[in-house]
Length: 492
Image (cartoon, rainbow, N blue to C red; front, side, top):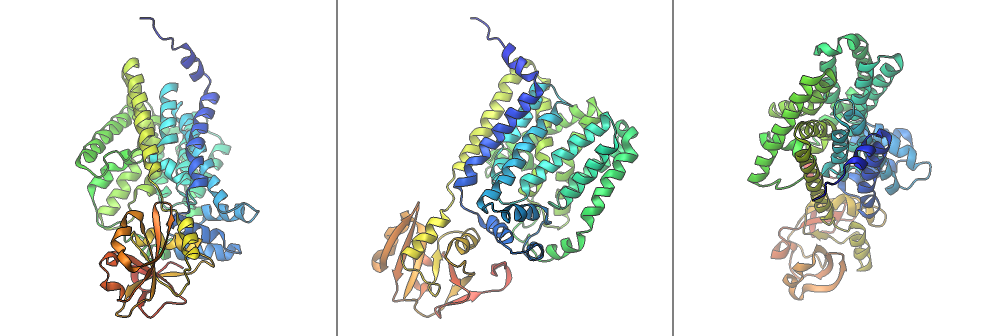
């Protein structure tokens, strides 16, 4: 059987610019479809409202009031929107950050790994599930990952050839990162610890520490707002400490395979062990490798320790910043095994991540715009309740955004008074349970929007007992009681 020549692939890998550009294109291609096809989600609606503010000060005020992150991404998005770019098209900011992130991973990887392994790490980030999911959102997460990778790249360049320009760039990136997401502080702290403790970084220690500290001071200036945001209890949904979620972070950044099952825990532990092995291998080889190891494990350990101490801030999306270093650590293990096995393992890893991402992106999002249009077409008025068989927090903000005049929708509880007309939004398969109460019905994708004519109170209907009831705050009917306190109160 003739051997397959590997010369074309090797020849391509000898051109780093071409490989980097190709990986960036893959990343952009993976993110672009969702940019223009997915409706705005709950969190994205919060961002859209910020971008819609008429001035800089109202925009910053709304960030402080409704968000749990600093204002840089919102300021960028607001500026882009107010020069004529539509709110949906501002999602391209995350697409660009994702393409730049994948390119930076390849560039960083070529300093600590063989070219093929660096390309593998870049591809994993380009098509990884969490990166693709946030790579077409009106949110700051992809920019957070990009700035973390930029910090690693600049520190490695500083390690090779220190210069004042690089130190200024490091300070700027640290400041931008700190003003993008508070979890960037964990990455900056890991980098600071590496510079302070690693013998291989001794010759750049003072200069790099000053650069990181200077950038950190700019971000710390926003600390009073941080405390205000933290005390608004935006993190109640995280709950108590669970070690399983901490262990699962490296794998869950790339794939959701068996994430809710025992086998998922086992796979998470195995993958974490592989990443740790990669960190050890990188750490033994060079100071640059030890920086990658610190950025892969340091933020997860720090955030997990705070969570175990009762600070409920731990969430997978907040730790997207460790993904680039995790991919590099995994690629380091692949690079250490025989070439034929490495090719098989690398190909299998890309295939598994790609299939998982396609499957995850294939899960249909409720067509909020179509549901809102159908409600209006069926005669919905602000004085009539909308019952949704689904998660209140998933539906409320998008329906507010897509309904005419963007009404403020409250959660509500039914009273012992009959609502003559109620609109039900539910999966189409539940139609049969409604019996003869249906006045009109129309479809919005896989959901049915049904107008119900009732003769009994809402709470007497078995089919609506698990429904979330939404009413316009300005025109609530007497058959329901709006809830405007606690966690069900709308964020305005």
